[in-house]
Length: 257
Ligand SMILES: Cc1cc2nc3c(=O)[nH]c(=O)nc-3n(C[C@H](O)[C@H](O)[C@H](O)COP(=O)(O)OP(=O)(O)OC[C@H]3O[C@@H](n4cnc5c(N)ncnc54)[C@H](O)[C@@H]3O)c2cc1C
Ligand code: FES
Image (cartoon, rainbow, N blue to C red; front, side, top):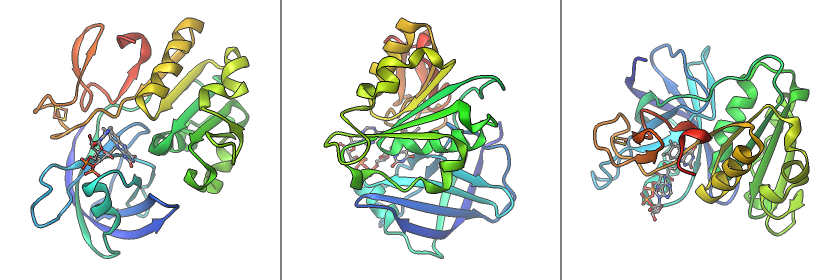
């Protein structure tokens, strides 16, 4: 698929909670064919000190207004700088990168599990799955209620469930403690997940044990984003794979989990 390097205009920069922001970037050219699980590699300008681009999953796309939305969680200097960008500023990015999730079949019942900023590709997948919303369950985990983002505009696309480590919203504990994960996995044909490594491994292993198709979106550290530097390599059952080009989405059966 063709990759584009483009100067986007920052249309919106909205703080969602303590350390999560939603950025809406508008391309000057028409955009097309961007799928859930794909990411864009964003240049961050800070007196040339941050020279590597930073990867962010696509949270949403509006082809009519030529916009791509991102969910950016402040982790270090680059993400902080990005969230400090001002509306009207130009932001250079390469897109779309990586392989997307395999879209479900019409009759599938799917479980989407997002942790932290891993919720972004799950929301995009829920919105674009094309399934009857009653067949889509979205389970989102965070430390506390204040770490969850407002998902109200995604409500029409499925049934939302929440966990928090302190019990301030939804079930107390991790996503893997939620009753839907503990007792009801058999009712799903496919599981999709993105989030912290430990969370995805726990989900992936359970899916393998139960023989349920499961795709995970890995967030290995990246540099080039298009298969040249090899810094994002994952050791899989079929050899070393670049997460940026062979992934970030992998079937758990292909991983050494
Ligand atoms: C395919 C992909 C999709 C992503 N999607 C999103 C998204 O939608 N929203 C979002 O907020 N973030 C996302 N990330 C993570 C995001 O790229 C990092 O948070 C960002 O690059 C950190 O840059 P920084 O300069 O702020 O932090 P740095 O200063 O580079 O690092 C700060 C600290 O975070 C650690 N770190 C940096 N990157 C990662 C990483 N990828 N995984 C684990 N630890 C890391 C570093 O080791 C360091 O300890 C994604 C990453 C990948 C690979
Ligand atoms: S980030 Fe350079 S090869 Fe993947």
